[in-house]
Length: 389
Image (cartoon, rainbow, N blue to C red; front, side, top):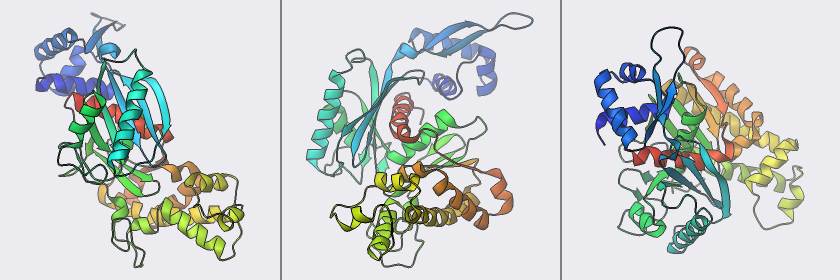
């Protein structure tokens, strides 16, 4: 696809329908070139003429937009509990809502085979889309090189690009993306205002990650490994992080840290509605149990999440001082606690960020919630398919 055609598609994907003069002005391309490229995109079935716009005077301009039926894009989001699957059309409308299937993400060939079986079972349930899905994008936690197609944390037991393996296993062109970056992309594309072009998305889950949108573009870094927020050295402790190092932010500020601290406090005699659960069972608490206890106004759980928010706010303040973003969005399972996490985080940010910089940045929780990851996968699949990233 020609460069100008890609630019037009990117503009329609990001901001919706436009007239020929609007496209020419926005993209700094001549009307003649825009007209030729739009005609070519219409011939391919990617763009459609949606009719004339009413104006008070003069000739009524025609509006051009993406053709929803030009193709479909699937998102697959992996975590330790389930696989989430969804489908969007060319225009970004969700045509198949998120479906969760029980799954445990492990770095094994067995887990990869199970994933393929889940995808094939899902395909059997959507015959109306078979042959029309242009691309799937699989969101995977860890270090992902979106351009080379390699995963260096999960499913990294082969010399072949993981994208090649998934394409063969699924029977559909496949791409991969870091799960947090996919969430950030979904929030940016679906929930941010036009003037919010610089976004920091914090994924506060079992671990801690960040997705960066800079000048309206996902920032992957040289090898695709940007956003390892949880592995900033922040504490002088002896807690070994999942990465093998000590003192990482994640060791004190994450779902794993929250569970560890809460369990220790209960075992040392502090009271909670989760006390019997901790003291009488060998199975560890889930984040869902903890967030549910927070919403049931359990004082100990509220205090524990307050501490997490305060510590997280210190590091978010540093990120704000460095990037001066339009917005910081807090997502992931810990964000489900809402203001119990957000208020201490904001208080901590206000204490540590430069005043003038603080005034520029809005801090809020994810609007997409549990849909962010899988929707981000769908949107990533569309952008990757047309070479827009």
